[in-house]
Every structure is written in C-alpha cells, then in structure tokens.
Length: 150
Image (tube, rainbow, N blue to C red; front, side):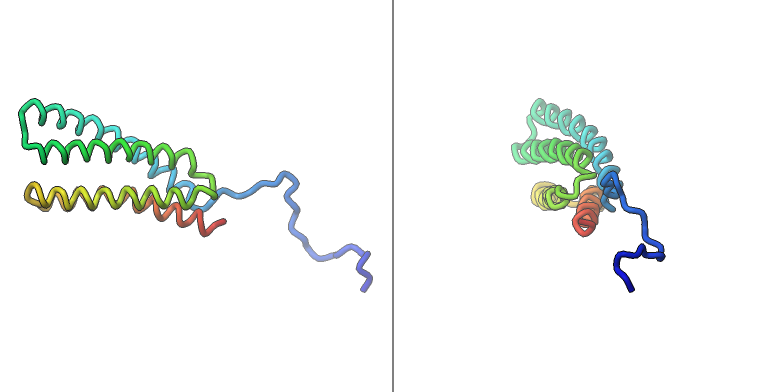
C-alpha cells in the first residue's frame, strides 16, 4: 500500500478552533459555589446579629468566641464559594478547589467539637453539621472530577 494515497476510511474531523470540552465537574462546582455564597451570606447576617446580641447581653466569653468562629467560617464560605464560581471551568484549579472543600469540612467538624465542649450536642446540631458538610463534599467531588478529567 502506498502511504501517499488518501485513506478511504472515516476519520473524525479535526478541530481547527482548538475547542476543549469543559471539565466534567464544572457544573457541580459552579452550583455548589453559588449555594455556598447564598448560605454563607445568610450565615454572615445571622452570626453577626448573634455576635452583637451575645456581646450586648453579656454572654459567656466561650460562647461569644464560638459565635465569632462561626462568623469567620461563614465569611470563608462566601470566599470559597466565589473562588469556586470563578474557577469552575479551570482544570488547573481542581486541587485548590478540593483543598477549599476539605478546609470547609474541617471547619464544620471543629464547629461540632466546639459546640460539644461548650453546650450540649443535640440531634439538631448533628443534623445541622451533616447538612453543612454536603456542599463542601460536593466541592471536593467536583474538584476530583476536574482533576481526573485533565
């Protein structure tokens, strides 16, 4: 067979524009990032009001410190959500998105431990922490999907 002859078999068209398909975890990161920003905004408002109320009522310093910690966590939730929205399509940011999800999970677990040491842990506290872990887990899964899709 002569190598200069054209091949009669089907060949998929070449992509002249350099189109790269979006990473597989893009939508998961984008949607969970939007939800993190929304719930983080609500959390910032509620924890700010709790912090102001706790200080004005003269609550115990440990409780005020826990509310302040929760305020910091909700602010970081907004920051991580915005970073997820911005970097959802970027495959090279997959590891940093996974790290943000792991950090949010760790902060929620520290929150549960702090609540157990200061006040009684009720079923609603445990359910709240489990629900609070869902979006960071989706962040981790989406980042892992993007990382594997490289």
